[in-house]
Length: 141
Image (cartoon, rainbow, N blue to C red):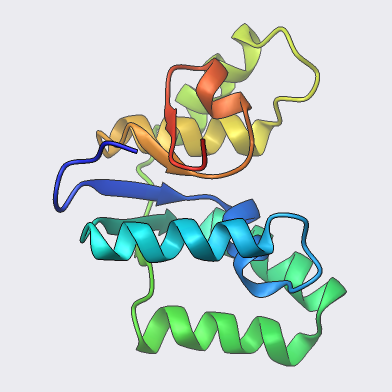
């Protein structure tokens, strides 16, 4: 993967989940990618919605304590920089969602793409090909 030093990478919920769930099909690959990206000194960014998505799945499938640990680690250790989304992100997401032709592209995906556009982020740490289909670079490929 060819990235610029200090490039900003959006971290989607599925990547966070893959990092934390040992039984996730992408677990080992997610850690390999995370390690490579840290060596390249990229800056990890996410938003509250992705963090809440991941926290919910972690709570349900791993446990409530693991979800709380995730939230504490993000806050205290700043594993990912959590950026607030702008007021027009929802409107941009809705427009993106209207343009989708696949039923597998969720409103969450469109929200995160709109967020990335607002932050000038083109690279995404995710295993969801919806990003690539919409012009973003997946760092997992």
